[in-house]
Each structure stands twice: as C-alpha cells, then as structure tokens.
Amino acid sequence: MRSLAQIQSFAASQAVPGAIEVIRAAGGASGITLTVTPPSYTVQEPSGITVAVYETFTAIRTDDGDGTNPVKFVDSTGALFNGDTSWNLINQNQWAIFCWTGTGWDVFGN
Image (cartoon, rainbow, N blue to C red; front, side, top):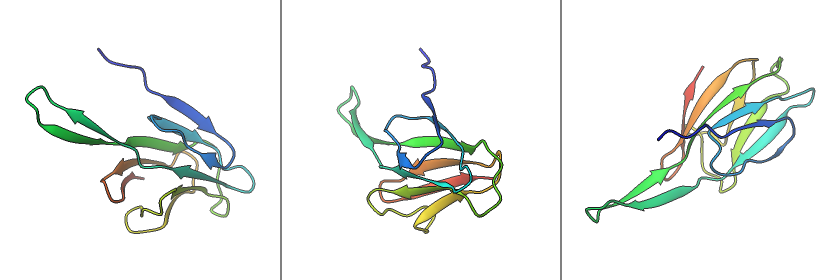
C-alpha cells in the first residue's frame, strides 16, 4: 500500500522535522535557513538481517530568488552536503534531492 507524501511548506528559518518527504520553501526578502537532522532507522528483515534505512527528501524553492536571499540547508550535526557545510536553493523552481549516507548528505538536482 502506498502512502501519501509528507509535504510541508516553509517561509521562515526553522528546524525541519523528520519524516518530511517534500519541502516547499520560500526564501523571501532576506532568505531562510532550514536545519535538517539526519535520521536513520534500523529495520530487521524476517530473515534476521538488520538494514539501516536513511532519510531522503526533495526540496523546491517556490518564490523568486535573486541569489542574495537563498533557501539554505544546514545540518544540525555539522554533516556536509556534497562536501560543503550548506546547500542553497537560489532560483525559483530550483530543486534538489537530499540523501543521507550515514556520514553526510548526497545532493542531486538542478
């Protein structure tokens, strides 16, 4: 059975709760910072194998950005995004997929 995506909109700097699948973010006139925490879940298969399941979410910038007011993502534990301390969505309709690897975030997008 499929579940509905957990979608949340953000227009102010704040911590992102876990289990969000889609983030719709507006940076506004001064930009915002969204703080993510890398949750991971341990699942035990019926055969007894334990598997780590990591967080993945998609984010899109919904308002018109000019490069000086980004929607900035930072990690609460200091983990890196493709080797950088943060990840910015600058332009309207710019999107990214964030995948926790266990030690940092792999980010894919436009």
